[in-house]
Image 1 (cartoon, rainbow, N blue to C red):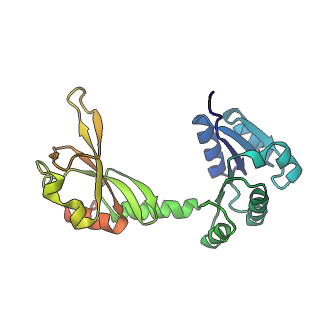
Image 2 (tube, rainbow, N blue to C red):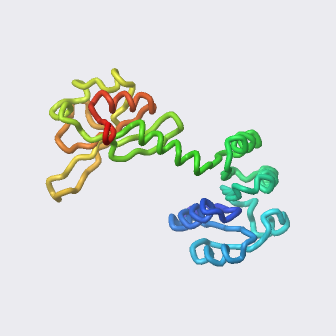
Length: 234
């Protein structure tokens, strides 16, 4: 018997809410959207399971369309904090397992967390934090933010690493950083990369390898500085 697809509700079509709704639907999930703006609901309708034009504070309508039965509720009303608070109370009373809310200030984020919201999203802060990491840890190919204090980054293999192993370099012992994988060019297709997860400690690094390094942001800064990765113009 096939497992039922997870159902998400998106309450409020901010840019964040719209993006979450369409992206989750593209991944195969059931997505129910509610917003009072008819133009926005009509626009998103072809790209979600169901789009309802209604007041998100009309509890009878919300009950009727099954919002309390969704596994995750996403509130996209960053500039309507009073409405967000009432929605959180409604969703908590309905015992929705996970609540995610968009906010526009740190104070509002803290208040919602105290109310039991599982995750708050503050796009401007998240973008700023990501930019700080990119500026602080220059020369990387790419990075994924794990938390405000940690990241997974892709670091190009420097000349000093070529021909050496993790045993030789002692990266974990020196920097408290874990090399959890690496990307290496294949011989079968020019430019193609294969990802090696958890490389052996005795594997020798090659030219053009890309290291996947996981660690605290401060440790990553020191690591990239020590191996000679500098910001452009630095």
